[in-house]
Amino acid sequence: MVLLLAAGGAVAYRWKTDAAASLVPAATATPPPPSAGVPSAAVSRSPRPVTGKINPDLDNLSLQAICTASGVEDDAWQPKFACDGDQTSRWSSAFEDKQWLRADLRRRWELTTVTVTWERSYAVSYRVETSLDGKAWQKLYATAKGKGGSVTIPANGRVARYVRMFGLKRVNQSGYSLRELEIR
Image (cartoon, rainbow, N blue to C red; front, side, top):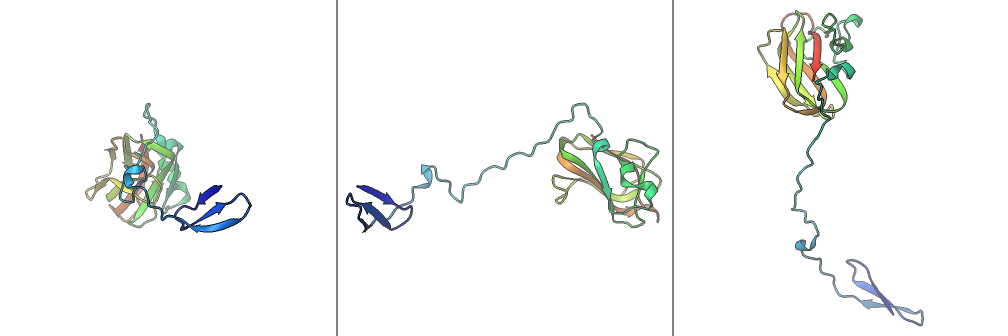
């Protein structure tokens, strides 16, 4: 004779040797206590730490990035020119305050520094932000007193796939003009 119980069910089947099956009431199953290895809904697990590839040689990661922008002044000043390692080329944005340049590093990296190098048309107010997915952004640096030039921002091992400069206020009526977005 074989006795089968369905989990959580109230009916069991008993198989007799004469091939006739009959229904018999089953005992009510009691769930095991939480200490028996069954995770409880109240138990929380620590999130796995986010990791990124280490850049031991401090290579300029933006040289291999895909750079895009919210707008561009002209074809001669495309976003890629701010990620090419050439201080004589540049990206020039549309002539509006809220403009951004974004570098997709193609994988997650542990960052050391981010350097923005401005041309004469710089941002007075801007943020440098990082993201793992290109949607949720975390502030790495912000200022409302930008003076142009070259600004190096410590990243202290922040893990990111995306880095962007988000301009909020221009110094003049031209667009933002960024010679280089260097990411190490």
